[in-house]
Image (cartoon, rainbow, N blue to C red; front, side, top):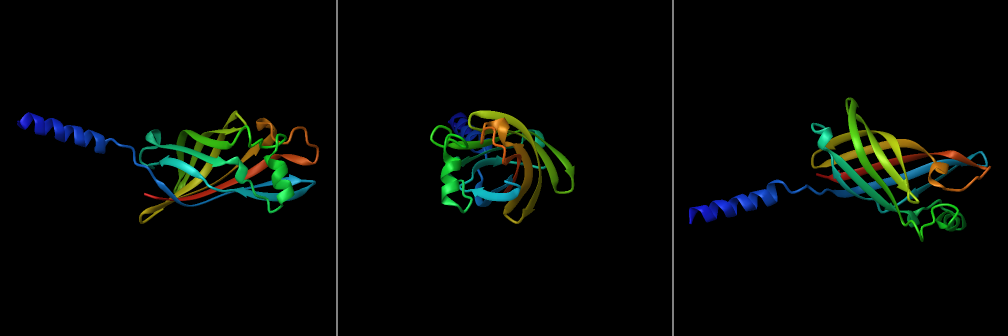
Length: 177
């Protein structure tokens, strides 16, 4: 009888002790800027969803997988947003999600880190280095990062002569631990 209790206890511990901790995003902002006709144009995406398992003491065991719905692109111009959702740009009907998946992390200094991420847009994946800060306050943690991508690497906008190739993306997220 004792063996059954021990086996049941071990089974319970193995299910709870090794379960991955899921985090809830409490706040997020994904914004971008790109030059269009020589002027900075900015916008954002909403509805960030992520599975974040980040531990500064275990960077090799840390993992971030995030997605955002490409159809949430918003530049405060409905006509432009509809164009961005079309086949020449994000083609949201065929490629509804933009994803970011961590490959590795390194600590640089203080609260500063750098991560290598596979970024996938329109079924094209590129490795991108993302420097970011990570801070903990009570039961929350904040990630703040900024990186540049080449839009043509992802087939966004075609051979557009008035749109810069380089876009700056800023990601800010707060999670409950």
